[in-house]
Image (cartoon, one colour):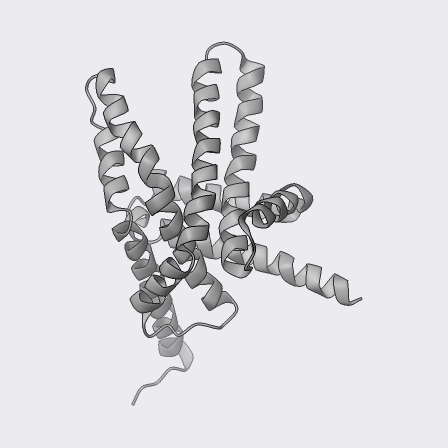
Length: 231
């Protein structure tokens, strides 16, 4: 008999959720294999002349691979959170989200890639020139990170034109301090644990867990806005 109550039921539910998170994270990595390959090679470069050979294709691949794959992952966790998802066909559902949102996510990914490139160049240039400017760029980096995460949530939750989505994401990022803090802290904690404590999280949990926590915060904020609009 399939007993899903009590201790065994709780253990079954936990195992099922771990499996779902792990599979989605693996799908995400699978769709980013060329980027993963380039990132791993960056760790082993011996001469600075090799850097452009890896960075240029990495930058070119980000909008067309990383952002669509990450958007699909956010689409999956959105379905789990709003309880509107068939979890029996995970890859099929992931692929559907990937195709449905590809153009929008690639377009927004191009803009975000350019923004991150400008930020990275500025940080590289000012790293040893001004501690005050470096502090400001670190703050801007956190804001850009939260903006990027929120844009994934906006993309999968609303059907908006790109400019409208960017504008609404900007307003959401600077106008919802609780959401901002929740996204920044939850992502930071997961990344810290994944990089410094449990590195096996990286292939199995890191991306999907960040997506789940951040969309959960986004959705709670969304429900509060809806509730206020009714009163």
